Length: 438
Image (cartoon, rainbow, N blue to C red; front, side):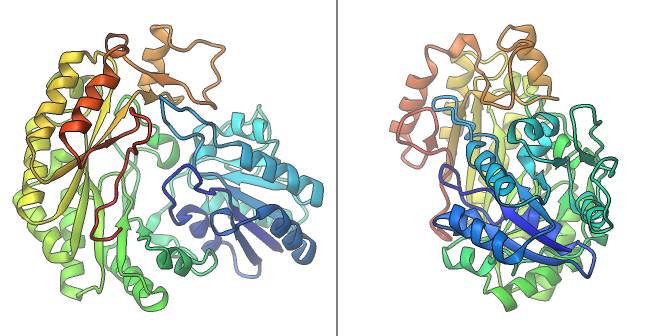
C-alpha cells in the first residue's frame, strides 16, 4: 500500500529539529509498502505541494506527526495546532484515504487532539508497532476500529505499549532529508534510550514513552552514528534522551564505546544533575562531548522538592563546574514560578546560578500545565484550571506570590548576565545554542 508520511512541524515559532519520531515509524513499516514524505519545515508552500503529492501518488493512508501543542510561553501563548488542522482538512478534501495523527503533541491528549484536528485516527505513545498495524489493517481492507493502540473515537481507551528499542530498525534518515537539516547547520538527533522513571510534577514524558527505561545497545548506537557520518555528512550529534546520564553505567558504556571506536563526530546531550561525577565528565570529554544542557530547573532546595526534582542545588553547582573545568560548554535551566515559588526563592536561584562562571542559563517563567501530571492536580486544587479548561490549548501555572515581581527579577538577571536568555522578557529567547556548533 502507498503511505504518505507528513511532518507537520513548520518550526516557525520553535527551534527546528529533524522529525525523528516519524522517521522511526517510516523505517519500521513492513516490507512491500511504498512510502513518500512531506516535511513542512523544508517546504516553502505546503498546500500546493501536498495537492500535487496526493494527486500523483494516490496514498492509501496518510500519517501526520505533530510535535508541539503550543509554544509553551506564558507571556506570549500561542497554539500550534492550526497548521496541522488545516493540513488534515486539506487531505480530506483531496482524498478518501484515512488520516492518522501521531507524535508528541497527539500523545499528550490523543482523544482530544483527534477531535480537534478532525482526523480519522490517532496513535498514542510510541508509534512504530501501532502505526505498522494500522497500515497493515488498511492494506488488508479492514477499518482502523479495534487496531491496538489506535484511537478512533472518544470511547476508545488509550493503550501505551513501550517498544523494545533494540528490535527497532534505525530511522529512515533519507526519507525526511536529513542532509538538508545538516546543510542548515543542525545536529542529527539520536536516542540512546526511551522512558523516564522520574516523577517531576510538571512532566508528561510518561505519556509519550512510559516510565520503563529501555536502553539501546551502545554498539548499535555507535553503528548508527558511523552511518550518519558516512552517508549524510553528520559532524554533530544531539542525544535527545531526557537524561543521557541515567542510568550512569549505560552512559559510561556509551562513552567508552564511542572512544574505542573513534567516532568522527562531536556531540551534545542533556544531563540529570543527580548523576554526574568527575569520572563521567572525563569520559564524556574523551568521547567527543562538546556541550551539555543541565536540567537544573531551580537552585533553591525547597523548590526542587516542590518540583519533585531528586537532587540538590549543590548537585547542580557541582555538575556545571565540572563541565566548565573540563572545557565543555554548558547551559542550565531555571523553571521559575512553580508551586511555592516566592521572590526570595527566585532571587536565590538567580544568585546561585549567577556565581557559576562559564555556565549560560535559560529562564522560563510560568509552567505549561499538561494533563496526567501532578501539576495539573495542583492547578485544579488552587483554581488555576477547572473542569471547563481545555488543556489542548495553552494553560500555565505561575505562583501568585511572584506574579508581580517575576518579570523585573528576570530583567535584572539578564542585564547582569549577558549569556543568559529568557521567555519572560519580550525580544529574548529561552534557548541559545553554543557557538561551537551554531
